[in-house]
Length: 106
Image 1: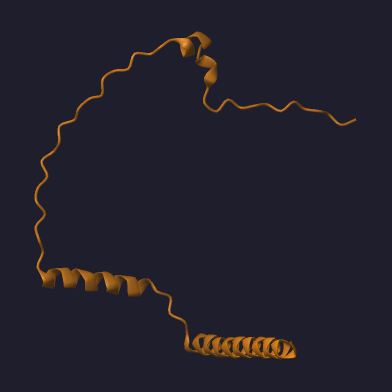
Image 2: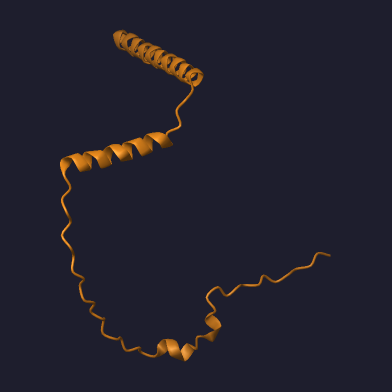
């Protein structure tokens, strides 16, 4: 016959060391510590040319991360897109014709 094993429940947070009486005691809360605010230095305003240069650097780095498709893939995707557009146009044209025909019957 098959053995039946008891499932062992793992105590993730080790709650065995917590006493039940501790949970009922009221714990005095310590007053919150007030941290001194650090002096904030005013941010230097960068010139328009510098900000534009930083922007162009970011654009260049993002363009390097792009995976550009090959010419063959681009042709395949373009053909698939054109056929999908033609299919959708024909489908909606037929639906329109059918509804117009049904409407003309009444």
